[in-house]
Image: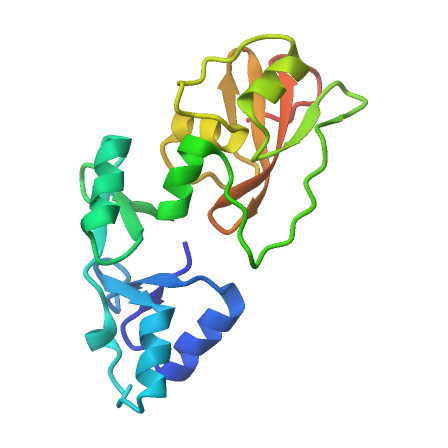
Length: 213
C-alpha cells in the first residue's frame, strides 16, 4: 500500500506522487501505526497554486474512511457517497490495517473492470498454455471463463469479472503470486496494476507444476 507519513516534506510527497501516480494517499503518523487522514493530490495542487504555506501538510488531510472486511458492499458504497474521500482503509477486528481500496475498486467488484482514461492496456483473449492453464485478464467476465472451463463457477450474482471474484473470495487486495481455489481450479494473480487485478492464470487443482503453496 503506497502511503505518506508524518515528517515527509513537500519535496518527498511530490516525489511519491510522481513515482506512483495515485490520486489519494493514507497519511500515517511517524511510527506508521495510526492513520491521521487522507491526502488528495488535488487538494495539494490547489494549495500550491494559491501560494499557501506548505511547511505543514496536515491541514490538507481529509478524515479517513475506515471499514472492516465484514462491512456489506451496500454499506461501503453509502459511506463513499457521504464521505469526504473515495479511498477507504480496511481493518481487521483488532484495528490492524489490512490495506486500502478506492470507490472504483468496489464498483469493479460489481460491474467488472472500469477503463481508466490514463491507462492503455491491450486486452487479449484468454490464452491457453501448453500445460492446459488459462491466462485471462482480470476484467474477463465470469461467463466467458465458464465457457472456457466448461463448467459453472460459484460466483454471486453481483460479481461479474474474474478480478471481482478474487476480491470477493479474499475480501482484500491480493498480492502478485497469490493463489486461491475456486470450484476445483487454482486462480493465481500474475499481475497487479495499482489496485486492479490485471492478469490471472487458471488451472485445475492437482495439475503438475501448479506451483501453488
